[in-house]
Every structure is written in C-alpha cells, then in structure tokens.
Image (cartoon, rainbow, N blue to C red; front, side, top):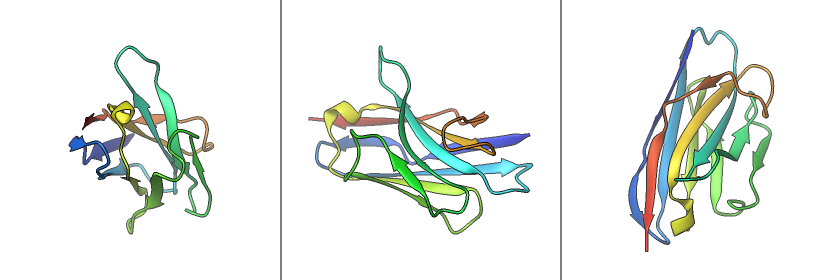
Length: 119
C-alpha cells in the first residue's frame, strides 16, 4: 500500500504565500508522478499542478500559472507546492495524489489540507 500525506495548509491573507508539502510512503519502490488538486466548498475537485516522476515535466491549471510552483523534494516521492500571490478564490482543501501511470490519472490520494485565504 501507498500512503500520501499532505502538510502546510493554513490561513493567510490575500497576496501572501504558503508552501504545501506532500510525501508518498509505503510500497514506493518506483518513483511516482505527483499532483495537486483542490476542492472549494460547493465545487468539484479540480486539477492544480502536476510533476512527473523524474521532476523534468510539470503542468499547471491556467488559474494558478505564474503564481504556483510544483517541485520535487530532495527525498524520492516528495513534492512541494509553493503558492504565491494567493487570492481569496484559492481557498480550498488541497489534495496531493500519486500515480505510477501518468500525470493525469492518480491511484493514491491524501486526506487533504485546508488552505484559507482571507481578504
């Protein structure tokens, strides 16, 4: 089994920054593609950013391009999401996910971490 754990959420004012961390552990013999998703109250979960297993390829939702950066950690199967210039509409529960298959389909999900941006 693979466990995915996020951390780093919290409350921040609009224009501020936060960094989320994520680690996949367990039967992680291979490197995984990692992604971030978010779900705001009353809305469906949406894609935020992804990084492939080698760390050489990234993808972002248009709504966060230029503000958020996904990067690999120093330890295998860890990833960060640096969020700058945060907006009130970025408020959501942020989920990390891991995949052996692709940067689009994910098999393993974390429990989520709350990010609240106040005006």
